[in-house]
Length: 248
Image 1 (cartoon, rainbow, N blue to C red):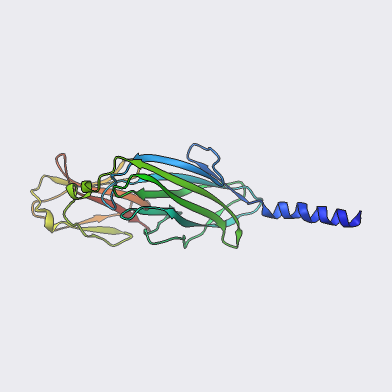
Image 2 (image 1 turned 120 degrees about the vertical axis):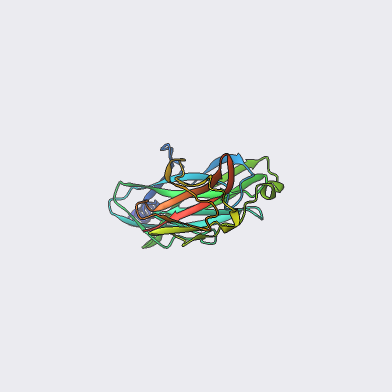
């Protein structure tokens, strides 16, 4: 009986240790812990000029203690010519980064909503798959994951060339107190404007541009850290667009 009790105790203990401290839900609060979600959209989204497909995840600490949490990316199936990246905390990582470098301290029973996954299909139809793993930085075995299927169609790789813009160097990356745009290649006529907007489409900065202006410098000191989009417009015509990371 003693041996049976010991075996039972160890078995139950093992179950306890295998249970993660975390759960993952979508922006609507639906639990997707260790499961697969699907995002649908157009395949004709190209890095960096188009707004990407995106998915927001909410990470909840179900334990009784604060946890320092990291996220890593596992690219399971993506086509050539596509790009993907993620944001965690105030940092948006380059497409080459597979793991966050900054932890987020999530208090007991608290939820962190700064995770975003972005995907540019690059004109390729199909179902493309990326997995993200969220884990305790002090105990990587304490983890959960979510697998994202980006189901895209209508792809046409020639669209990228049809929508090609003049090269507009932007920097520094990330921007802190200011950001500069090299506009000499645009031959500005004085009727253009530069708009910086957040991912919901809300304009945070709008700057009229001058005729033949070669450089534009915008103060970002009052803009919150995060990922933004920018566009230079001449009436209804877009002369260029891209993404902007602000990090103070």
